Image: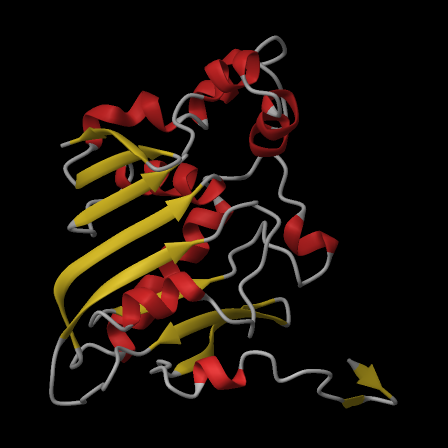
Length: 227
């Protein structure tokens, strides 16, 4: 709770639980800047991190797309980091928290956000090149799953990928999903009726022949396909 610009603690409900748990260190970095807007990158360090060791890496991509990684507790990142992974995540264009011009990239998803995510992972690989091994995994849920599908059809830099509730075909989503019309317009800036080719352009399924990454598709908690 904020009061006169100060932060007051209203409860310590979790203190007794957390004090007996190992919490992995989290650091926030600025990995690039465009037009005076700083792009946030989060690095969750492996439990009992040692600079002389090399660790595998997991890139997490949030859903939304208008959601934001912040300083709030991230149980998924902590769980993975506690099992010996570097866990990294960022807020690409299309995310919340940087104003409307940053989040409103209608018709440019899979382009600007993809560029920002790749810039982030390249920045991380360079900064931590002495602390990571070759095993890099990308995981995303919902819109994050869409971006996982997009990434593995446009680059082979990851050894494995997990797409949870991700979208691969925006045309089928448009006609079958309860949020299909809204989501497809946000991603493509159009509909299959108005510009079928543009919807195809933004659909990862149309680049399936490019995939060389070991991947797994999940719907809710059910694994439906693994290659």
